[in-house]
Image (cartoon, rainbow, N blue to C red; front, side, top):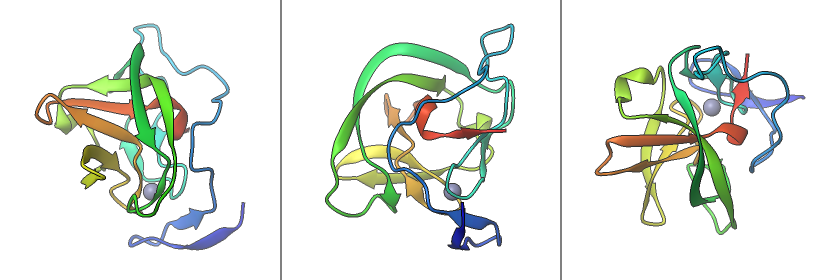
Length: 135
Ligand SMILES: [Zn+2]
């Protein structure tokens, strides 16, 4: 994909999908944690290094479609497959924002999102598996 700009640390910003997309390849290691680095699909910023978080399924939530800074009138989609942690130190780079009254997680570099949610007074963090890229 062609870069459409650069973020604050001069990483190319790509034109990318704003909703869940099928992820190919193995995602989990032998201990059911993330096998690969989990990164922003728009700018490549690192959210979680490998082996940082667990995957959870069947947690049903609605999340607004992704835009820069979560702005604009866009739709929502239902998501049930997440990376989960209760420790904000597990993140490498992340941004916190409230979008339409919902506490969400954004890319800390290019501010694209929401990629996930904060719940339980900000102590539980859910990142949508199919809104990230992997390397
Ligand atoms: Zn980004």
